[in-house]
Length: 605
Ligand code: ASP
Ligand code: MG
Image (cartoon, rainbow, N blue to C red; front, top):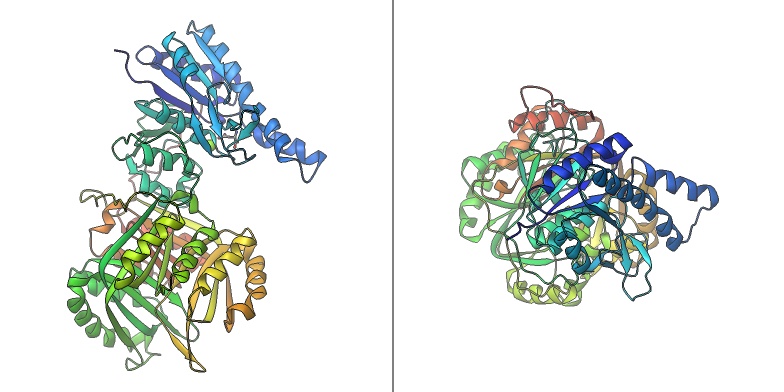
C-alpha cells in the first residue's frame, strides 16, 4: 500500500530566489523517496506586493476580477520553476494551477473561500509517481466559467491545508523563514522560546501572534478536519512547532471552508455569577481579588471587567453553580481588603457584591469572526429578537460569550444554531488536563478603546451598535459588557466597551454618533493608545489561579488594567500602550516562559 501523501507548503521567502527554489527542490525530492508529495508554493519573495504596486500605479480602484487575474500570476511563476528544479534533480514533477487541481471556490474575487476540491486529476499524477507542485492562494470560481479567484493575502496556507484534508494526507508541513511558533514576539522578549506544540484552538486565540506565520483560516480547516500540521524553518532540519489537531474527522468536503463564520454554539448551563460593583480602579485590585479566589481553589470561568465613569470598575466572574455559595462567601470577605490602603479612594461600603445563581453561558465559536463585528451583532440581535436579555458579554478572538438567565439556555442554543446555520448540537473539546495553562502570550498594540455609557438596558441595543460598526467595515476586538446597571431617570442602563485599531478610532466614533439617538446612550469615551495583552493556554480551563497570576504580574509593575475579557483558554487585559512592552516582559517571565538564551532565527543558506 502506498503511504498517505504529505503536503509541503513553502512561503514566499523560502522560494525567494533560484538558489532557494533549488534548495526547496532538494528537500521535496528527499521526502518524495518515502511518500507521495504535493507541494504548495507562494509567489517568489515580495512578488505579490510588487504586483499590487503595479496595479496601484494605474488605478485606485482596480476591478477585483483583474486584480485576481494579476495576483494569481505570482504563484504560477514559482510552480513552473520549482517543477523544473525537481525535474533537473531527476524527480518527476508537474506544476498545476488552482483550477487544474480542482480547487473550487465561491464566485467571489479577492477573498474567495474554498468550497470543494476534486482531486481526481491530482491523484492520477501522484499515482504516476510525480510530485505535484500546486499554485497556492488561487482557485476557480464555481459555476463553470473558469474564472480565476484568489483566497485573500496569505492564502497559500489555506490552499495547503485544504489539499491535505481533501487528500487525507498524513500531515501538512508549513515551511517558512522562522523556526516555528514562539511563546511571544522575540523583538520585545528576546528570550521567547519555540513552542514544541500548540493546539489549533490555542493557535486561533493567539491570532495576533501567530497569524503572520500561519493563516487563521488554515488553522480552522486543520481543526475541523483533523489535519496535523507542523510549522518549521526552510533553512534547517529542526523540528519546528506541531499544531495539534483533534482526531481526523470524516466530514463532507463540500463547503470545506465553512462559508459560515460560526461553527459551533456552546452552552454551559450550570453557572453562577458573582459581581463586584464599584471596586477601586487602581493597579492591584484584580490581582488581590483573583489571588484570594485562587487560593480558595475556586474554578473560575468567565472574567469580565469594564471601565466606568469616576474611579471605579465592575468586575464579574462566573463559577460552577455548585460553588456559588463558597464563591460568594469569599467575595464578601475580600471586599474590605480591596479598599483602604493605597487604593483608599473608595469606601468599602460603596462596593456591592451581587450574586446570580441561575445563569447560563452561551457562546458562539468560529475563526470566521476574527475582527468582524457583524458576527457578534448577529448573535446579539438573534437573542434580542427572541426576547432573551444579555447580561455580560466577553469576547476573544474566536468566541463571543454572553451570560443569560439559565431558563433561556436551551432556547438560546436553538436560536443561535438556526441563525448561524450550525447543524450539530454543541460539541465541546474535552478540557485537556495535561496542557500547560499558558502556552503563549500575544500583544496587540495600537488599539483604541471605546466605552459607550448608559445604554438603555433594552433588547437589541448591543446588536444595533455592532451592526453599525460592521456597516462601516471596522474590525472590532474584545467586546466587554460588565455587570453594572445604573438607573438614569428611572431607566436601567448598561455600559459596553470594545477596542478597534487606532486608525479606526475616529470612524468608530462617527458610526456611534450616527446611531446616538436611536440607541439613546449618554456618552462615548475614547481612550487612544491602548494595548491588549493576552495569555493563552488550553490548560487554563482546569487550572486555578492562572488569571490571578497574570493580574499579579501587572500589579507588581503598578500597571493598571482597564478591561478584562476571557474565554476558556484565554485571558486578555487592556492596558495603556506606554506600559505594553514592560507588561509583556513581566507576564512572559511570570509564567516561566523565558528561555535561557535568546531564540536564534536561522537564516537562509
Ligand atoms: N502570495 C500571496 C500573498 O503574498 C499568498 C501567500 O503567499 O500566501 O499574500
Ligand atoms: Mg504566509
